[in-house]
Image (tube, rainbow, N blue to C red; front, side):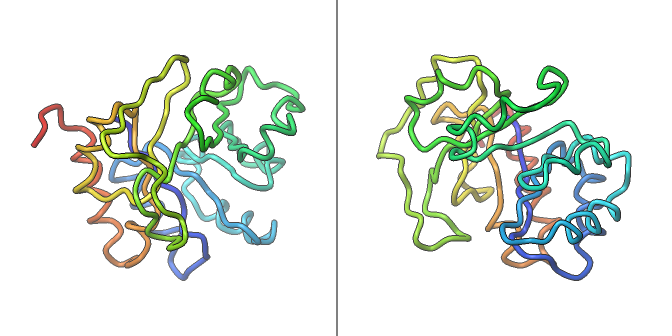
Length: 200
């Protein structure tokens, strides 16, 4: 099962170094999302990430920076997708696109996207007013070819449950960044859980 890391919503000291350590420890995909950030702040952070890892970064804002940094992963939130902003890309065939949904009925509408986030699957850790949208006994029925990534309240202890629900992967955010000094260890535990094929 895949594991995706979403950035801390806020910038913090030593962030780029920690991101590089996460990549070194096996992080395959890193979503850079910082609502309200300035473009120059994005540029500074991206400039301090090891260039060999930039191909694993997905941009949520300032998509135009993709050209400058050789990034080919772009995320379009639900509102932007519904506006058709992803259709304005010059070369969408060479770009990996992702999006977000809040209703599984929308999966069949995502033909231009590689994967989508769905949630909150559990009570959000980073946003206390975001309760789970998943009912007890939920089992994902994915009629499309787009991978569905569980988002919201994901901890290492819940990854096996995410797998049992039928998701293709899990995204971690609040549980990783609440205590940044423990983020690397927390990531390694989450990755180990995702890579295991047994239910333990």
